[in-house]
Length: 548
Image 1 (cartoon, rainbow, N blue to C red):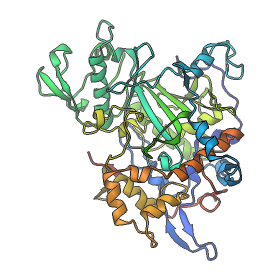
Image 2 (tube, rainbow, N blue to C red; image 1 turned 90 degrees about the horizontal axis):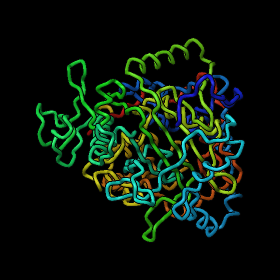
Image 3 (cartoon, helix red, strand yellow; image 1 turned 90 degrees about the vertical axis):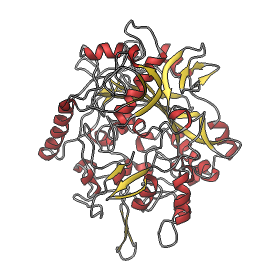
Image 4 (tube, rainbow, N blue to C red; image 1 turned 45 degrees about the vertical axis):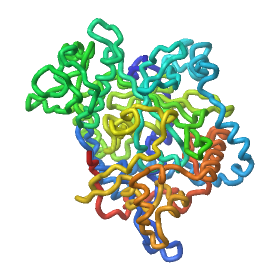
């Protein structure tokens, strides 16, 4: 089982220049666009607001100030992500369309019902993967089969549930959009007590209820459910003061006012005994996420779909519970340390076998393609790039991005579906509030950033959405309001180029230099070196508030 790194666990000895790799490549973007000849400011781009924003407790990483200035330790002023400056065009030209299509159409995850990486991890694993040299793999072993039913639940070849459940969600802004290089999916799994009754017997009804309760706690809203008899569980799910028939889980959590919520089944018994915890904005102990990142593929109708080949398999497990008080103290301690020791880089515990601990209760681990295209464990350095976003920004909810953005009950299968079952076509751009005004979330990103990603190299999006004066085209905005795939999906030509660019990184095994696929070098939009005290040009930070 994945756990928190302890004093007895082997630690990876990491050079100082590697420790800062939790700062992602996007943070080196030149936000101020200037004329090359005169140095005069033309426009200020603010992609920073998507991640760095006013947070909602128990996320106390209120970091909206980072929209205004680059705040790097001196050792990280030099941009370490050298792939950003690479010209991929010569190598892309060597890969034919037929070659890349054949490559991404071949699964490197499973074959004939067998999970390829899992089989390898269960046998004689390579010594380089066995960090503690005990002859066994002690990290996560992939166990999802991607065989989903009409409720989003994954099944093994023998028909048994694996516990994983897929959900549809609006991708996070910028780099996560398919038009910027990758498709992806995310599955969630709660621990066994959330799947069983008080006798420890599996119950799908109980599992679905507990997932709905977690959804209500994370999204802080009422979640409709199929009518259930509350007397079977002894929990007032609809919060009407009696046990009757409930058709929704009502979100009402304010312990200081005597308003509490409860899980059902064995999780309820463990909650009552203090061994399982419940709080708004936090997942219960043992929650797992599985996130696969893939190449961009298309079906026969020209719709974007997941490629069978996986670029990465990312895994997260919540291994420790932290109260609001503990999380606030940890955040305040980080602020104090940054003030007292501004040059000190963060030390992240863990290793590539058991995962890296993010300091907020979660362990992260990943697998990525080797030179032959097979999945292998990510190195410490390669995994480190996940930690910065999943532990140190204001935009996350208990370190997560996807589940807070899960589609609700008005969507296909109430939002519980996998991308192989249904696409995001027809999903509307959700409304958010910005400075007291309502606007579509993705439309706001385009307005704030004046481009389709952090690196401003998506000419396709810019041509589709902006006129020659840099203004958002009304018709394109109207189309986006009704269908987010109008923005998210690239043309097949662009997708082909991005697939090839990433394949070059795989061939080079140069992930540690940056794994974001692009075509031309980004010298004009990314800093090679950031001057100490450099400001972004943004005068006032932007705060976005979702409207439910």
